[in-house]
Amino acid sequence: MDSTERLAFEHLRHRGFKDIRYEPDGNVPPDFVADERVAIEVRRLNQHEDTPGSTRGLDETAIPFQRTVCRVLDSFGPPRTGASWFVSYNFRRPLPGRRVMLRTLREALERFVRQPDPKDVRMQIEDTVALRFHRASELHSTMFILGGSADHDGGGFVIAELLRNLSICITDKTEKVAARRDRYQEWWLILVDEIAYGSLDPGDIDQLRGLFDSRSKAGWSTIVLVSPLDPARAIEL
Image (tube, rainbow, N blue to C red; front, top):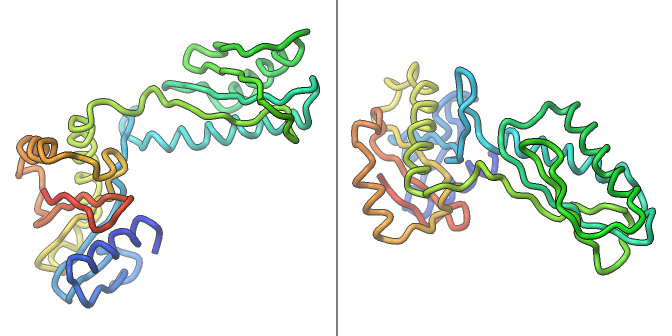
């Protein structure tokens, strides 16, 4: 059971289900069956980007990119100039390929190191990537330390992003359970909300429910958005 499924399990217990079985039919849908009558599928509700012929989560590019940045920063080893530097970056998609970014990042950091008197500075290294250098107040074991990042494709108007990504997640899960629908009479979809994090106020909730077309439920009797911060906090659509 992964962390997303664990949150769903805790939510089901909070709702009063007593008999909650994980993967009752093996590594196929549903993820849970509650009280021998409700089949439940679980996934994260996260932001997606459009790619040719498909969509993918923003973190599918953001996480590998951060690993690439960290790898290059670490490769510079101990401080060379008597100071350590925090390096932050911001980016938007499309990102250059991994090999291009490895080379470009190294070249940018080498240029910074070669300056006779390095200062806090912002450096645009690709059309879609920029670095910001900030001198650390104390010497660290490495020359460069990751200071933070900003994904300019993330965010957006919360309700609009919820609706757009709800459609993507519902379609994905509906296709996955199609061949097993007739095994259970009632199907629920629990989505762990990594967009709003359960922080919608009552007005936002009313707006979301008003804009969410009931036909979009695609045969799911209940769709629940669960906060990853508190599995007892949820919105039912």
